[in-house]
Image (cartoon, rainbow, N blue to C red):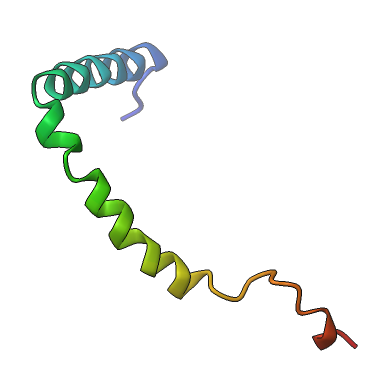
Length: 61
């Protein structure tokens, strides 16, 4: 079954509108965790992106 472009656009539009109203009503609950999420993401970024491109030019032949 193939969906046409108009139907997909209508579903995406309804999803954006629904997300807007949910976030508007629950803003403090939805984004109150962001400071904690940033603090939790920092160690993960250091773990996975710790040694990429930090000027190790002496390792090249």
